[in-house]
Length: 352
Picture 1 (cartoon, rainbow, N blue to C red):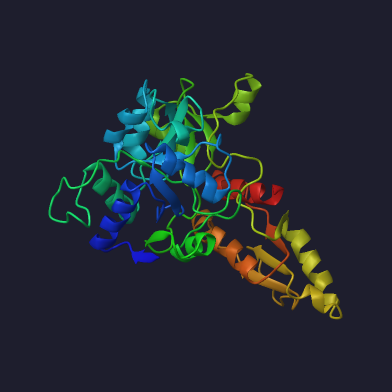
Picture 2 (picture 1 turned 90 degrees about the vertical axis):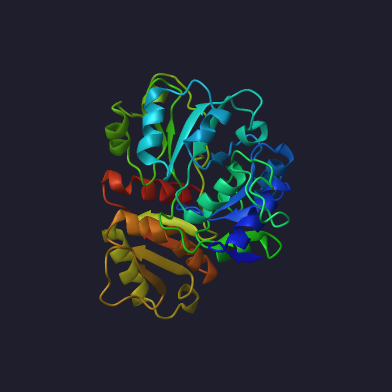
C-alpha cells in the first residue's frame, strides 16, 4: 500500500509499522529504502530475507540527526564529527566503530557500523517521530505515545544486487501491495550515498557518490585515502553496503562503450533491416546524439551533467528492462571526479 508521505497520518502509520517490527518502504534523497527498527534483530532479519541479501553484508543505519550517533558508535574521530556538521542531513554515510551490543543483525557481525542522516523531508519526519517517541495512530494527541526508536536500517528497497528504486512505484513493483510505502516522489539524488570509512585515522573512500572526496577533504581538513591505497598497505577495508564487484544490475546485459564504438555499432544495425528480432532487444543511453537513430535501438539521451544523469540513471535502467531489451549499450563517462558516483554504479552493473 502506498501512502502520501506528506501527510502526518501517513508518517504516524509508518512509525507504527516500524515500532511493530514490520518493514516499511521509505523515500530518501538518494534511493528508496526498505526500513526496519535497527535495534530489533528479528525485524532486521526480515530485510535480509525479503531482499535475498547475505546476512553478513551490513546495512546502513539512518538517523534523524547527529544526536543519535553516540547510541550506535564509539571512539568517533574529530574529522568524522566535522563531516556530520558539513554534510548531514545529506547523502554521506560514515563507517564508525560500533558500540557493543547494538545493531548486531544490521552490522552483519562486523565491529563497525555505517551511519547516515537523510535529508528527504519524509525520511526526516519519520525518523524524528521515532526518535522523539512521537504520536501514534492509537495515541495521536500524546507526544510520548510511541516507543523511542533511535534509527532504522534501510538498504535499497529492491532484490539484492539489482537496480535500486527511485520511486514508490518501483518499490511496490519489487515487493507487492502488502508492503506499506511512504511516497516521497522521485529521489532527487538518484544514486546511493558516498561512503567514508572513519576507522583508519583518516577518511577512506569506500563508495563514491554525490559528495566527492575533494568536498570531504575540504570539510574536515584531512586527506581522503582511496581503497587502492588501503590495499597497497595490505589493510582490508571494512564491509559496507553497495561495494560488491557486481551490483545495481538490470535484467538486461550492460555494456559500456566509447562514443565512437556506439556510432559504429548503430550504423551497422541500421544497415540490417531484415532482422526484426534486433529491433526491441537493444537500448542505447549516451550523450552522443544520433541524427538518424537506428530503428533497431531504443534510444535515450544521457544528460550532459553528472548530477542529472545520477538522478535519472536507475529509473532509465528500469524503463529499459520494462520494455524488454536484452542488451543496454551505455556511453563511457567523462574522466571527471563529478562522474565517479555514476561511473561506479555502471561499472558494477556491467560486471553482473
